[in-house]
Image (cartoon, rainbow, N blue to C red; front, side):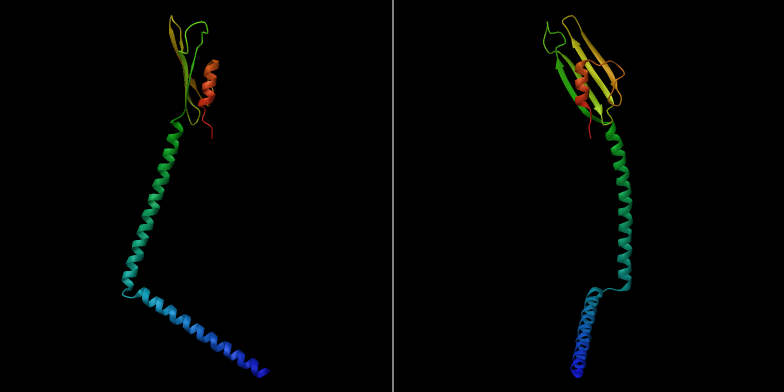
Length: 153
């Protein structure tokens, strides 16, 4: 029994040595194929080129991030909410010739423009809006427009 174990042990060792040799041989063949026709100088030039490309990519990434930041800041100031409502402030005369317009940016700053039309005259009002509120009294129509024009996340 002891002899059989020794034989099995030696067979396992031989198989391991054989498989290790095959693995080493295949690895050497792959390396030879990879380095075929190349010299150390060629590899060094290739690595230098790749390093230069990586540096350019990092610089481009930095510039793109800066541009995105600028565009994000600008977009917050651009018009995002725009609503219009036509109405008749004088039910006994005319039709929906009066209007209210809400114009807001992403920070809900902007203006509410309104026009009241009657046969005798037409009046136009502009009321500044800061953070979604006006320091001036808003008509019901202007309040409706302001709520509809507000930018929500």
